[in-house]
Length: 149
Image (cartoon, rainbow, N blue to C red; front, side, top):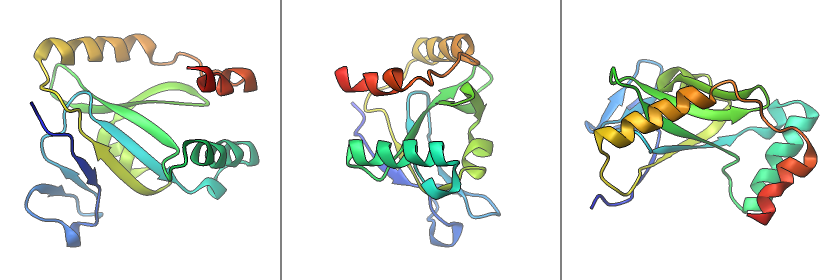
């Protein structure tokens, strides 16, 4: 069974050979796979007042510096994407593009602590294709419903 790991994305000047550097400084660890999650510590004050309130509330409620999350999807062609939800709905972007345009102070990857199968990867890819563009619930009672889960 794979051991759960947490990897902070770092500046390429601090990376070691296990990371894949990009000329702009973003390094992605090798071996990312379907089911790994990405945590975002975004700068709340860069958002609209409503977005900033949601950002600060998420951090306070969770007692965490992380306010947003996405799941890595591996498509049949082997490309990695990030599936996440925002006020525009559920979105799926190429992983590197999504991370490079993030307004986050910190990004962190949590690896899924189980072996992945091709069937699991395929089902996650199919699920992501089904939910892309699904609307995000904006009503306050829907946003707070997570409290009852």
